[in-house]
Image (cartoon, rainbow, N blue to C red; front, side, top):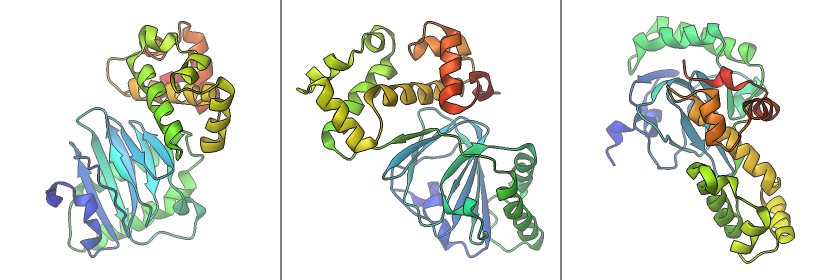
Length: 266
């Protein structure tokens, strides 16, 4: 692998308290990695998935993620190009915000501050004005954070459940009749299980029911589609299996606390 194309894999070699990297066509790597530095990500355009050993997070357009230091992860995206604006931080604060991976709305003041850091992108030399500005940004982050958006899927540990999840998500991704004809007893029979046994194994492994997982995956798939320019709420609701736009919108708000229109690509 050409490490030069994946600077986020070697960013700890930069000897600064903060390192800014803005990239209009981010090159994703399937390699699991960690940073000694924490990472703030703002998605200017497109979307990305953040994968940890236990969960998969969707980071949509115009939203931020905070990845704490030392957390093993990898990244991916189903679309390109993806414009990411990243700030790697060696020093933060004792705020609980910096201890957990969070996906969150980008307040206007934070967005403007992140955009302002573009002038220091990939600068490896110390710059006093940059360092002072980043310190102010670090102080603002916990103050502007309200709540984490639940765009997260649990990762199965049981190989049997992993195969079922792959089957269910493939049906949703295909859409149309394949998805609309999904019946839990028939899915269970496909894997030589009873519906009751499949439900029990599902809850034991990932903590939610099959129907609950399907609903959550459909909503995350909807956010992914809404992040693509040219899509609208009606077209997305149909693609994830909802004939009624109002039912889709109400379910979306129930699961994510937002209306679909709030997640549409600008």
